[in-house]
Image 1 (cartoon, one colour):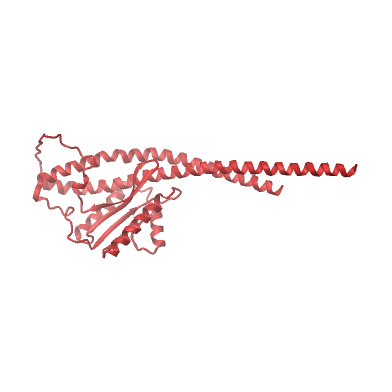
Image 2 (cartoon, rainbow, N blue to C red; image 1 turned 90 degrees about the vertical axis):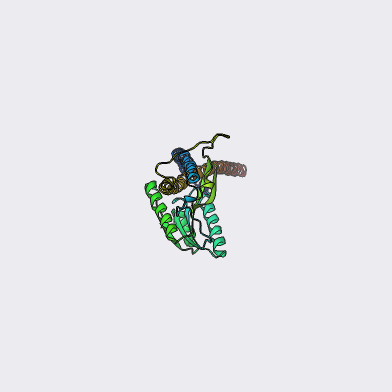
Length: 295
């Protein structure tokens, strides 16, 4: 009977775990709905802004001289910012990105590039510190901080560092949100800005139709005003997609955990019934044997 009690205790424990994982799945599903809507809603703005910058840049022609567009002849010092979540229980969401960033850093350092590392999220901070990487920009428990405040601070640091020459290039690593079951780790160059690379979703001109634009103030002045804004939209998109991907990954992980708990409960219940049947059979045999002995 001690074995029966142990199995019954395990069944109760797994049922409680199932309740927790099921509740976490529902919570993540509700948060995912809002986060994915925000990430999706921000994309058209970024794409339209990229299209505007392309047209303004084409109008400015050779007069384009913004420091944010000026590529260095050689990249000797770079900044990479890795964005993960503060909380776990979301499968390989954080670990996969951190591994990708670590491999990239090691490749750059092997090529002679001095890489400075910044992280947003406790998971990335723990990952790199446990592997003895120096983190010069650690930001943890940022979930309750206003996103625009995070975007402004990171955008200003990247812009000032690049313009001053502290960095020859600035990169950001995050999980691109594709759908509920797919979040793709990627490393994107923030600075110098590349207007040609921002064509995705930009409004295309109809073939054969020439459209002329007159800019007031000048195209150069517009670029100087819009480029920092575009930089911040790229950073904001990374934060929004990270948030959506985190909730999607956690919902998927908790759904898998709930299914595994159900399977384990079924297996333990079957084991409990077999053990109980064996115990009853043993008791019946003992009773029958005792009755036979009294004859």
